[in-house]
Length: 254
Image (cartoon, rainbow, N blue to C red; front, side):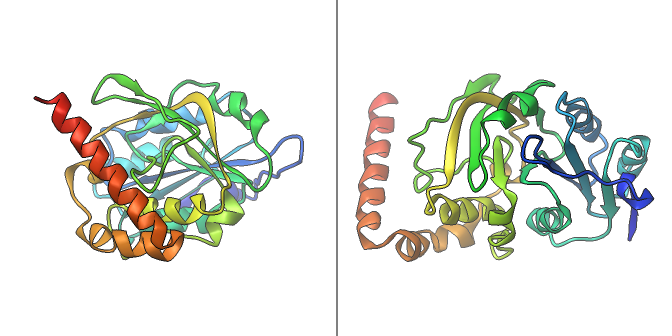
């Protein structure tokens, strides 16, 4: 394993009640084309208590060269083979020291340089937060809302700030290769500790693995997970709401 960053030189960051530490994790594999814009969007945040961790999956292109270019701005980076994107994200969770954690993987970026400083003042211990994002592939802002029903659709991880202690106890299940974050969100939403922020948090590349591939194992277990986490009545609620959505879609496409 290769590693580096400020932490390897004994430079660490700490949290205070007035100035919480925010961890941002970037997961990357052979990301030379997109990584630098992601790094810049993190290190240029005006909030000055951001812990930045980069987890590389043993890239064979110029990824490591780009990471080392920002050696003095990245708190910790490591490069070694991993077990896919969620295995790498779990490594980031284990390495994080912040109060909250965000995953801004290669190709995605913060919407502007003031995102963290503008929203961190709204944070309170124990809660996780999610906001809106700009979908680069569709060239439009995708709004969430405080009534977001994660049983029907997932929230992309880019606009989420998870309360770290909560996520450490609910790491991503590697059985789900593409939609493990949805399964995690299903578990965490049940705790009623997710709060919506009406703010654009991220630029989303929109061409990641969750768009180009399907997680058949997740969908195979979808209904059993709903039952296990939310109970029998939720099965009917979700079924009829999905049916209603499909009917509306069919009517609008005629």
